[in-house]
Amino acid sequence: MAARKSSTPKFQAIDDSVLGEYSVSDYSERLYSKVYYSIRSLCGLLAKNSFQDFNWDAFKERFASDFGKVEEKRYSLEQLLEFANRKFGKTKEDLVVLNELSWQRRREYAARVNASVNPQMKAEN
Image 1 (tube, rainbow, N blue to C red):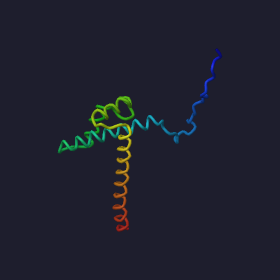
Image 2 (cartoon, rainbow, N blue to C red; image 1 turned 135 degrees about the horizontal axis):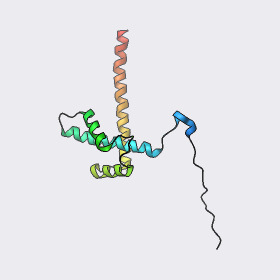
Image 3 (tube, rainbow, N blue to C red; image 1 turned 90 degrees about the vertical axis):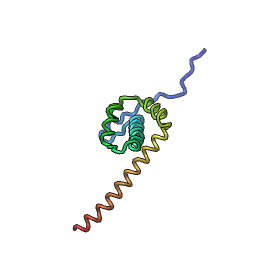
């Protein structure tokens, strides 16, 4: 029998190191941070609803001591996704949407703060 040729060509990986400071991190790294911060937000919201004297900064420190910092990647993406599914019933897609909503709220808040600061600055001048 004759050997079959592979129908999928072998591509050389693209080296984007030339971009330097403009290079983009891999999708899996960006996804990891989205999942990490979504889990932190969900845990924080539950804790905030449970404790009257809740402090976000103290919670973030405690979360980082348990889960590590996002740069450390103490747990794999699969472990984080399994945790989110078990604790919150959230899938990867749900966590990405939550992360996007969080960023949208931050942008809206920043716009409100800037809108309230700009009239005050004009009044002072």
